[in-house]
Image (cartoon, rainbow, N blue to C red):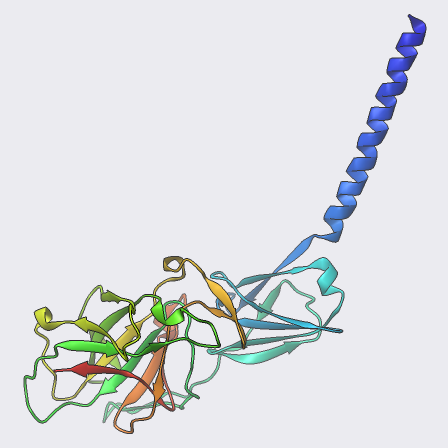
Length: 293
C-alpha cells in the first residue's frame, strides 16, 4: 500500500515537472513572438490612417500601412534589426526615424498655402503631382466648364476605371458616381446634387462605366459643374489592402490619367476631423471621367 502511494507521488511530481517545463517553453515562445503596436498621429494626437511605413532592416525591407485608427504592428524580434523607418502620407510631411523609441509617432501636416482673396472669392492652391491610386473614402473630382447653351440636361456620368500597380481586378471594384455644384466663394465643389450617390462598378472592358442620371433632371450650370468619383468606406470592400509592384495599396479602383487643359482635377483626402482639414488638392493632370448630354 505504501509502495503504491509512493508510486503515485512520483508520478504526480513527474506530471508537475513536465507541466512546468511546458509552461516555461510556451512562455519563451510567446516572448519571442510578442508584438509591439505603434500609432501614427498628428500633433493633436488624432490618428492618421493610410500612412505608408517603410521599414528597413539590415538585409531586407518591408512596407506597411497604418489602419483606420493609425496603428501598425511590428514583432519585437524585428524591432531589434531595424535600421530606419520612413513614413509617408499625402497630407503630412515625410518622416524618417532611426529607431522607434515611442509607441506614438507624430507627423507634421503639410502646408498647402491656401491664399484666400475675399474680394474675388478665388483660392490659390499649390499643385500636387497627379495621384495614380486612391484610398478609402477619397473623393476625386473633375471640373467641367459651363456650356454656351443654357439648361442642357446631363444624361450620363462616365468613368474610365483602371487597375493599378500590376494588380488585376481593381477596375471592377465599386465606387459612387456624383455631381457637385461650384461653390461661389471658393470655386471648389459645393452642394452635392445626388445625396447618396449612384453605386457603380465595371462589368466589361469598354472604355467607360456609365451612370444614367436622366431621371434626376440636372441641367448644366453656366459656371460649370464637378463630376465626382467617390470611393467607399474600408468596410465596403472584401479585401482591404493588397500587394502591388509599389508595395501595399488600398484595394480600390483607379482612374485613367489624361491631360485636358480646360479640365481641373482635385482630390479631397478623408480625415477624422473634416471641419479642420476639408482641403481639396489640385492635381497636375486630369482623370478620365466625363459627362454626357
